[in-house]
Picture 1 (tube, rainbow, N blue to C red):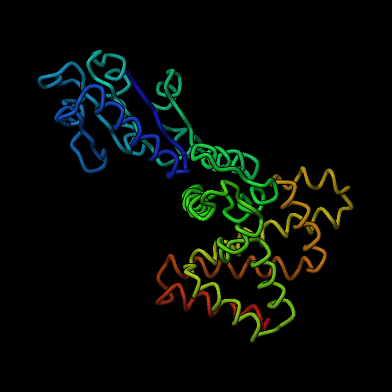
Picture 2 (tube, helix red, strand yellow; picture 1 turned 90 degrees about the vertical axis):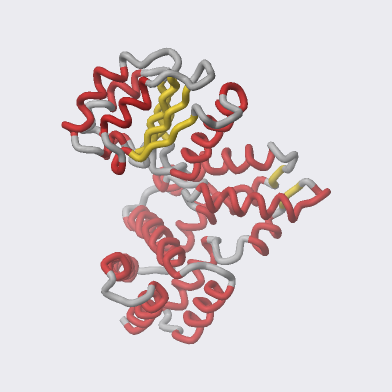
Length: 319
């Protein structure tokens, strides 16, 4: 059997991989001696081939997980085009990739692995898909969301399924015997993650309210939000506001604009309302500054992410 897991939503893909391994061990390999995980970039190609074709040890089945095979050079992948078609029935091979279809499109193995029955792409979820997923997570624990609370949480976590899982677990624990999650629960527990928090911060920046912006920044950091998380959240919020401001400037009807924004209607309507407060030049300038801040962190031009965030705020307020 061949299983292929790929996509940039690595929280969900890793969870699926863990389920596959756990189920295999429960059924076929309680000792763990017939389960092998290999990193393609750190393992000799011959060793991977040997693992895939070796018989099970004191058992009937083997599970071999290969991470990153499709990320190797094309020439290194080519021998597996033929080998995968000849895998013994005793081997269940799981090929795991953190990239999406576009980043893997040059791999000679991609058509073969996506043609099989057992392949899943874990792409980032839009707001509607995220809400459905969060709702299912809560329902599995016998807990329900008030509709606006579900929309608020989906908006707050954006496409981050790991954050969604953590926040949902926290809300489920808080719900207790009530078994219902209200808007107030999301507002009080999902600290610093709502669109309103980002909008308030941007509003302070736009009005050059240095002290207010700095206070809001400190509040988020004290609540446990990492500087890089805040930069990422600001970037998502600014991109959404740019889209909304463009739709408003073009006179697109609200119902159509809500659809075009591609987020939950609850969040889309709020973004359109909030975008009226900002000039496009201000938003595009902020976006450029955020890209520069991200570049400084990733290239090590500034010692710490927190300093990068502070410098971004100072520059944005003073601009």
